[in-house]
Length: 370
Image (tube, rainbow, N blue to C red):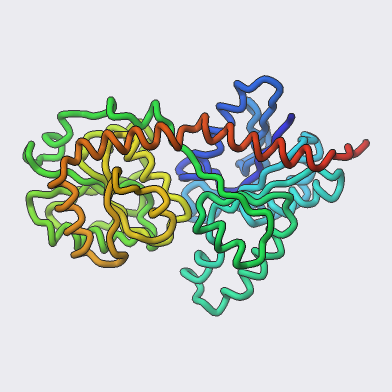
């Protein structure tokens, strides 16, 4: 079976979608009888090790992202590959290229709904656009043979839009990179903080929906015995004295070192469709404190951390203090076991193959000629 993934959500410093695609590409390459191709935007068209780039213009100030503007090159690339199944990873031009392939030679197409498009649009343009964006999502995802959602909360949103055949498919975590063994006992000294200071961490983009001001006010409530490490691009520059900023994209191994050396992960984002960074921290043996919103309630069990009210710095500070009073190392060990049992990439890929085989079995593709 030849599976092709197609998406524009792939850049040098991109997040969860690239992590998912890279993990899938690596693991599918070891499965007998499976061929995996990945189609992504690039500075020029080419191919290396099953990764096919289609020349696309760069997004200005887009941190390496490229936005496809011409349908024909993507349709041509898919026609050349002739996959048995296509998975779409974004709701833009590449999705319509996949649906054109479906029309041309009846290849089944799965849509993975990674982002809550109506919510993203309303955040940037206001709620006036929500009905139109919802109608677009309903139309586009209504064409797919199966729709995958990373969490139940997102699946429910799609079903409320009357999108059919929606299945929950969580993402996974690299248990070898994100591990308690990545801990660096010297990190506190490197940061210039006392050995008995409670070290907290947040890793990710400094986007508006991450609600970083809540974390900063939380740290003001917690005081000098607590220290927060903010890791990622577009981080704030004006921060309390008990906050250190690493304002750059960091490779996974570096993030794992910082996470495994901390006491807990904090996350105030209330619009997450999944929450991969929580899994990465839990895999490093960290308990988490997050808000009871988005998909977090599906990931954070009482054995792994605490949830608090969204948008409330004082509530988050109280949750941090409570968590650190109740044997955080034990919670961290439980968190690691939880992700080992539920969120390994091998488990995720096995589940994906179940979806793929079910869809392919339900639709025998008619091959195009010429």
